[in-house]
Image (cartoon, rainbow, N blue to C red; front, side, top):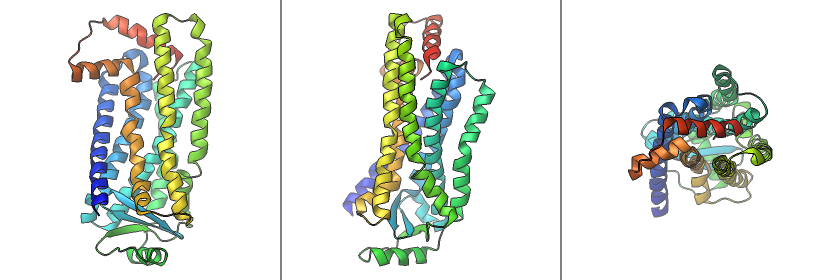
Length: 324
C-alpha cells in the first residue's frame, strides 16, 4: 500500500511537470521562434498540445491497468474516482487517443525533416491539413473505444476469475468486458501492432536523414557543423522516446496473454505512457537554439549580446539542413 501511494504521488508530480513543460514549449513555439522557421512550429505545437492533453488526462484518471483473459480493468486513483466509472473510462480514452496521436506526430516530424532535405518546404496550410489527417486514426480510436466501455460488476467478476486474490472493494472500476469486439480491438491494434511499424519507420527515417546531412558536411562552416552535431543528437534523443512506449507494450502483452502478471507492472502499463510526453519537450529545450537561450536567460539570468540578424542567419542555416 505504501508503495502504491508513493508511486501515484510521484506520477502526479510527473503529470504536472509534463503539463508545465509542454505548456512552456507551446509558448516558446508561438512567441520565440524566428520567422525563418515558423512553418515547423506547427509540428512542435501539435506534439506539445497532444502531450499536454495526455498528461492532463493521465493526472485525472491515474489508472492501474489489469488485463486478464479477454477483459481489461482500469482501477482509477485520480480525481475521476469521485465521479462515475464512465467519466473515468472517457478520461482514459482521451489519454490513449492522445498517446496514439503523439506516436503518429513523432513519425510525421521525422517525415517532415527528411522531406525538406530533398524537396522545398511545404506551405503552412498544407502542413496544417496533414496534421489533421494524421489525427484521423486517433479520432476513430477515440470514438470506437468509448462504445467498448463495459459494466464494472461484470469486469470485476471476469478479473476475479483470473486474479482471485485481488480485492476490488471500494475501488473505482471501469474497463472492457471483451477486447475482441471491434470497438475495443481497433484501439488495441493501434497501440500495439501498429506502433511497431511506426517505430521502425522512425528509425529508418533517422538513418536517411543522417545520411543526407552527412552529404552536406564538406560544404558547411564550422558554426554550421556545430549545429549539425546538435541536430544529430536531437534525432538520437527523439528516436529513443518510443522505447518508453515499448516498455508498456511488452508489459501489457505479458499480462494480457497470461505469461506474467505483477501489481507493479499493472500500475505502470497505462500510467508509464506519460513519460514520453514528460521527456519529449526537452528535445526542443536543449537542441533548438532560440528556446535554449531563452530558457537560459530566464532561469540562469544570463544575457548574451547577440544581434537578431546573426541569430536569424544561424537558424536559417540549420533549417536548410532540417529543422529541430
